[in-house]
Length: 286
Image 1 (cartoon, rainbow, N blue to C red):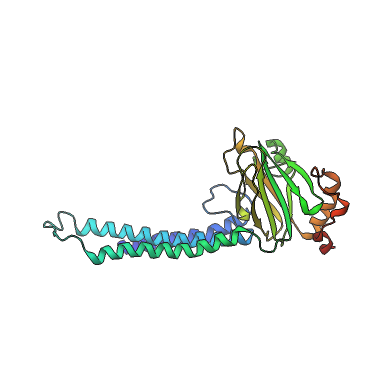
Image 2: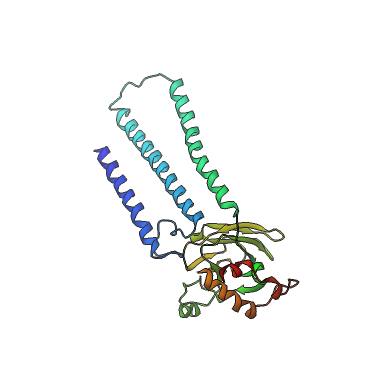
C-alpha cells in the first residue's frame, strides 16, 4: 500500500514539473496567476538556474520520501504493541558513520554544479555591449556608455496608463530598457541614494545596487519580447513601485532605436560627444 502511494505522489510531481514549464512559456517575462514554478528562462544563465533548481528538487524529493518512509517504518515496526520489549543496544558505529558521511556526499554533489553556476553567472567573458543601471528612490536611471553615453529615467506607470500601454499593473514604465537579443550584455549596477537590487527573473540576474560601488552582472537574451522585474531590496516607502521593464529587440532594431535615442535623450554630464562615440556595435550591424 505504502509503495503504491509513493508511486502516485511521484507521478503527480513529475506531471506537474513537465506541465508548468509549458504554462510558463506562454507568459515569458512576467509572473502569472497561480504560478508554482520559476519564470520561463530567456537567457543562458536562467536556463542553467532552471536545471540546477530541478536537480535540487529531485534530491529534496528523494530525501523527503526517504525520511517519510523511515518514520512510517519506525512507527509501524517499533510501537509498543508491535515491539513490547525494546532492545537496549546503543551506539551503532556503522550507522553513525553512514549518517555522517552520506550528508557530506550529498553536499558535495550539490556544491559542484552550484559553484559552476555562480562562476557562469558572474561576468560576461566577451561582452559586446555595456549598460548601466542606477537605482534611485524610487525609479531607475539607465545609461548607454557604448552608444553615445545618453541617459534616461524610468518611472512606474499608473494603473490606467499601464493598461493603455499594454503592460502589466505595477510593472509598466514610461521608458523601457531596450536591449538587443543574441548579444553578451555587461550590466553595471549602482545606486544614487540607498540600497536597491536590479532584478529580472526571466533573464536570470539579481544584483545589489550599492551607493558608491559598481557591481556587475550580465545577460544574453534569447528572443525578442518584454521582460519585467522589480527592485528586490527594501529601499523605502515606495520600494514596491520601482519596476524594471526590458524590451528585447533584434540587433537591427536596436541600432535604429539607438540612433533615435541619441537625439531624444540627454548625454551623461562630462561624457564625450555623441559624434565621437559611434559604437562598434552599430557599425557591425550596419
